[in-house]
Length: 426
Image 1 (cartoon, one colour):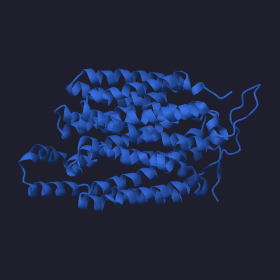
Image 2 (image 1 turned 180 degrees about the vertical axis):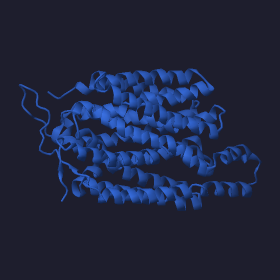
Image 3 (image 1 turned 90 degrees about the horizontal axis):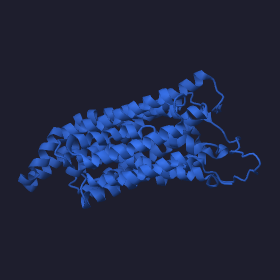
Image 4 (image 1 turned 120 degrees about the horizontal axis):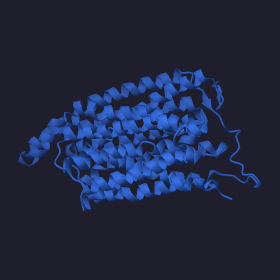
């Protein structure tokens, strides 16, 4: 039997749990931010349009909409530890599909693999995020999530460089410039060879996922149980909270998270393709993808140091939203490396949004924490929808002008930070 885990736990147990969850967040980051390479890579290998290439993010993140309601039931049935182990196995199955996808150069198989990997991540996210929020004081939840974010973004910084070596992006750049001069037979041969280079790194990912699933299953990771807690009680008012939908701030939090994930994915996953549109080689642009992750790590470190001693969670979210507007506008009105650097700096603006939105959205929900968490995980589908809209705008306008999409997203997040998280049903 798993032990019951409540906010009042021994420090040693908390630390062991943090290490395990930190490893999971590292895997989240490594797998997720590979999409920034897959978008331009598969666009060449599978002969796609710009819009079609952004179905990479759609397939990956739409899984959160499909799986989020199932995730809460899965965790209630299996428990957090077994549920996370199963989720890692599901991700390994998704990674396995990349092998036949590469052999046949079939885009649908790539998308299927990404969807399955996203499904596994949906279960992991449903478990891991409330876990980190609950295991300590509510006012410092953003600090703990920031630590997890560092694990996530360090992996995201490593992924494009490490996997880029396997994918031989210099050859991809050469092939892009030579496509028009190749015969159909030569082109097919080159594209087949290009697709096959995806296989070795994904075999490595499969092995790591299986080992991590075994580690989590064998670990002493305790269960989260806050079912006995009541929701927020307002003095002088009867407690009438019967469902999670009785908390308007949760719904506004879901919308904010939807928009945040959308802008974060745009910043991280479009930067290599955007660099190419600005005349910058893929081999150079991949380092800007890493710079985006580094900027996020810097932001997380700032959050760890300053929250809640210097600035509150809602204050950090306000500053982040304003920075998002400033950097997005700068990317639109400048060109070349300066514009690309502004997109990378969106990583700094985005860094403290996830750590702040989660605790602000879960504040006072008590026994509805799992349900609220599953709704918030559904918000991650913003990574499916918003980048796809960006892809359509990039084709209709230009990749640079398509970044206007970011502005209303950041403004809504600013509203949530200023007023939305305070709204309660009377």
